[in-house]
Image (tube, rainbow, N blue to C red; front, side, top):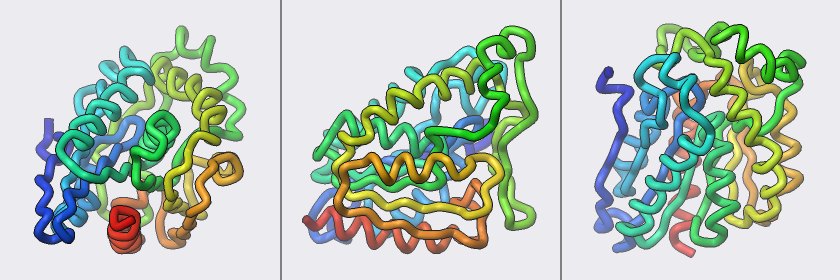
Length: 254
């Protein structure tokens, strides 16, 4: 396992955050790894926030390993990371990329006001792709599809994701969408929504579903015009870092 794909933990320095111990949970996406979240987490950590970027089960190894894991495994890892942060910090904010965004939206629905804020980057809870309707059959015939990793506009950047997309695992993720969507009205935390207009992995169907259904009254949408799907490593990464730092500071002060 590369050091970039290993979990990231940064200890909070409350002397930099007004004496308040602020924790931030960041979740990577499907077939990705903490490598896609590491620069973001390190930036927030440099400001004094305690950060945890867990390695979701089945990731950072092989795509065949991931094919044996299910949505409950990934959500369990995110929930465990939240509990650790909640124990050690006064305030917790959660963020996620792609599937990570879906995971933290479910976390926000389950935890309610215990989460001070939610940050999502190109989250996925729906798709217009017709081939997903065939997944219940295809997953028993074909083990994987071509990779969805490394959808990055900036040249020379590697997400450290898998070279194949395991079908049994992606079917489990897609199977979680109806439940996540049904629970979106339970999301009341302030929401920071980052979206790349040109995204070759997550199409435009998720955004209106999420923004129309959450109960959050504090919602900020930020466009990422120079980035593709993995925007946390792309040209607009500085925008994500700066806007999220301001967001965390604001919601942790209330």
